[in-house]
Length: 386
Image (cartoon, rainbow, N blue to C red):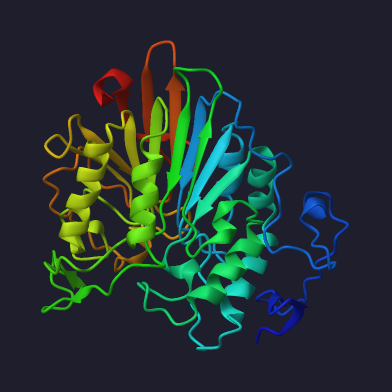
């Protein structure tokens, strides 16, 4: 059995737990990759700080995007990612699996999950290699498929902000959404918009045929009063989209375009998805590419009929808990319907890479496997996003 003890940090505590072989793990402030993570009270942050902060004047050309890593599973893919020599990593949801099944407001499972992530040396090398921007999804929010009804969401947010050392505007308001513009040179500015699809989201409509293809867990809810982002976040998003930028990465932890399944997605709140498309369109924002995770699979999508230019989406998931592992042995995978999907779904471990050629005006979007090999690729011309 795991043995845990807790060190107090204000009203919260971080858990230091024994490893699965029951050997105690000692976390000290003397390990070089954790030195910058020391809190004022001497408690070490569960997730180490990067060696350098995000330099918003720097022109970006290589960006990693990824989601869904189980802290107790194989961590070797982090070393593959560290070797990509990216300038920024976007880690957007299910960053750990810490569902609070104990119903304990002190969130022991989530704290223990963060501590296990902190003990991952491959993850520490990714954190040292480049700055990282994050948002959450359900399993690091606190409960599977949870939304705004989750009773401990304020506790989860406080823990998230401590773990990821959030000291910007996100710490001053409910939710963990944020935006950054990176690049001082006009014509080469990247805006990263990280949405929070959990803290404010209305309950979803349960399926009427549990497990049936296309409606496995939920059905689209026509109720126009339901929300994905909440009014404050919607107003914030509309304002962010008016800021000058040449490429905009709109990050949603759950899929936006996909229509072929009955799991969580913007599809389940259709009025809100239309609002998202309309908000992009009405803002006049150019250069929007959507990034998403959550599905334990990867694929590329595109809609040509919802804005003044094609909306492209790349889904990358999971780093070490892919869909193939959920299939019964020997059972072939059946591709789900995908009227807007450009590629087959990838059900093995994967991550995403954006390579921006500013001279050519092209963003090369690729999905890569656990060995770093390219599996899917799509070139997006920036001129097509205007």
